[in-house]
Image 1: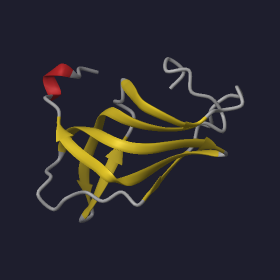
Image 2: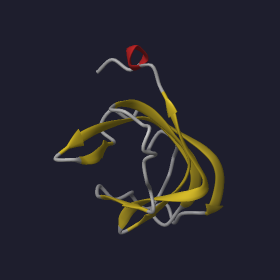
Image 3: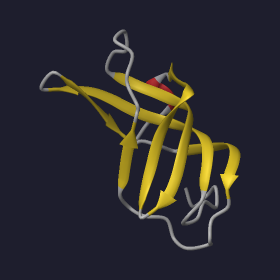
Image 4: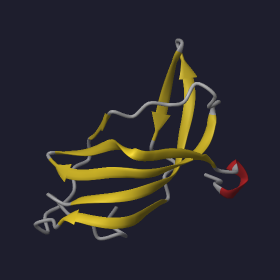
Length: 105
């Protein structure tokens, strides 16, 4: 996020890649730890230059039933940095499979 120069209070529409999905106790768990890039598509509101928060909250994001465990590019989400980093689904949010060999960690 710092590479994209995002700051506190900023809201953007972006693609996040990669995120990892795993199943745990019958539920899907999403991990941001493998994320290497944030592709900012649009700045909705400018930030105040402050540092971004370390905690993330996900809102309105669902995984389609046909998705399996693996590595994905999460496209067209809204990111807001205000107290917590908020990742919100939009009506254009989609999941795109990403070949795991491209993301070695």
